[in-house]
Image (cartoon, helix red, strand yellow):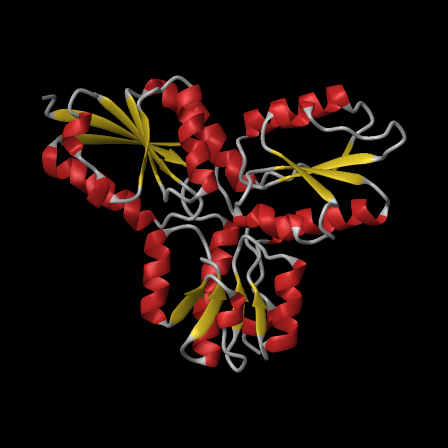
Length: 314
């Protein structure tokens, strides 16, 4: 066993502006409206965050129909379909939309394309709440979901069809570029959003890991299994040359003996992960090894999003 190890702590990591805003929406709603407040779906994909908000007075629902009419209902950061929005407008007194503004931007762009008569392709992961929300902005059958290059090869449109694409915000940047290249190859006149849809935080975290993963013998991404952006970070680390890359929920799921043969371990975290979970992982290593920590960064993030008017201080 190697008793000393180096940890390369990679930034940017952890909470993005959309996640910070979504959590603040729930906390401010509890302050303003009292307990409980109801949230459609998990507000963000992190077990620790969800459990903490439950203790503070949030109730998370799988079905919006279960929300009482006289209590606030909050939409998660991933966004919701028009069907859910319309149901809430008809049945709930107070609706608070915590959809990340960068996801809303994709919704708005898809709607613009639809109104201009485009066939719309969405690059994304089936059954992810963000994808369900984006596809649910328009009538059923208006958006064609593609997950793989093979899916693109099976698309068939008429020669005079106008075609455009949008993407999920939390995809692998490199994989998405490959998908876009294939779309442009098959449909040379395809149109896209004026700015790319993958969000700044997703890109920044992937680029930082891409820069430093090949300097590590192993790489840990702290994040939940159902977090799309966290899973993509593990893929990025492997593709960057660190094949021993793993997704770790928290320190409790860390078996330090599995890392005994590694001298240098990289650590980052997904965009919905509180820093305390990273600190706990490092502490567990420090309990078992002599640890040198090197902090590395590919830049600062200072993006902030305003809270919805329903929870702002008057």
